[in-house]
Length: 416
Image (cartoon, rainbow, N blue to C red; front, side, top):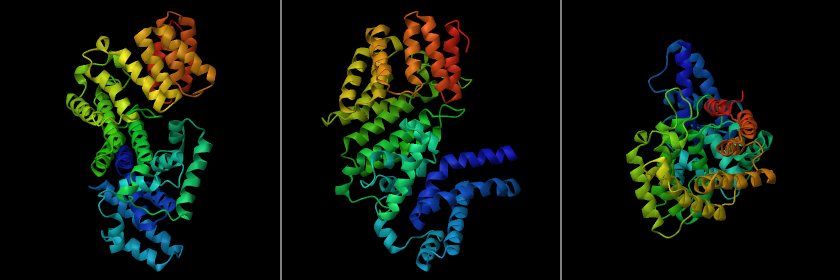
């Protein structure tokens, strides 16, 4: 029974955390209080569900419990009768007329939360990090890894962002239509990082967290309806569709990582590929290519190739070059190195990787030594490849990636 309850609580956390926190922020206006009460509700669920059983609607139980906890906290702390009335109105399932005026036109608390987090008063990194923390429930270490910064640095950013929202009285709402474009880049960044954390988790036993990426895709669709003329929104939706189409082929039956060139393409989702390609084609016809559209075009090259050998690596390398011009990044350059290696040979790709290493970029990013190791292996420089695989293995943060790298290391004749 205990194991069943723990699984139910973990599942509810993945599916309902963002909605619960967003709801509590909407009715209390206090970000820290919302997170604390949501966490208290999940803690209480572990005890209560063991005694009474898992409720038929876990999310509703958790929301009600968290809301009651917030009401109690506000009462004890004497925040004020007006705030208590606001919480009580929410507990009855309704909203005040003022609430309805502010929140009209957007059917989801989580989308309001994203736009609030992405207020231009906050720096870009804080916007994205705060949304990942409050909406997705990602831990500070997970967010720090996504940004490739120390955990302490990310913790400080989150504290400062919440303080800024409180002190500046930033409203919990989607801005008017004429102000939407100025927040689009940050919102798209939030959604893509949320999708990526679900598609390729930064840590833990599982490489993928399906519900997290599904939530990102759902919100991206909602944003696309809200902003139908924004090409990059459509580009991000196409990109996530094309990535998600390959999900089931990325892991074998044992849960181990399967490289792209070895994946069973019959397991790719043809309907998602068709939708993503059609959406991308329509979007590119607008003549405003941006980073998400270019990334979608790269993934489309893979998704539409009849086999690994038929992949147009020259086109992919060119697209990465264009992407690097728009968003210079060591991660983009590392991906370009892989494409160049496939198009021109491993020595050409290794040259780019070594330049990245010499620059000191990505010191704790396991895919840098992993890429170096793979290129050295293909050049039959097995001793150097083994050293690089060991480095990558030490940095990898998911069990499936560690197992994959350990297998590659053993293929060099070396021991882990």
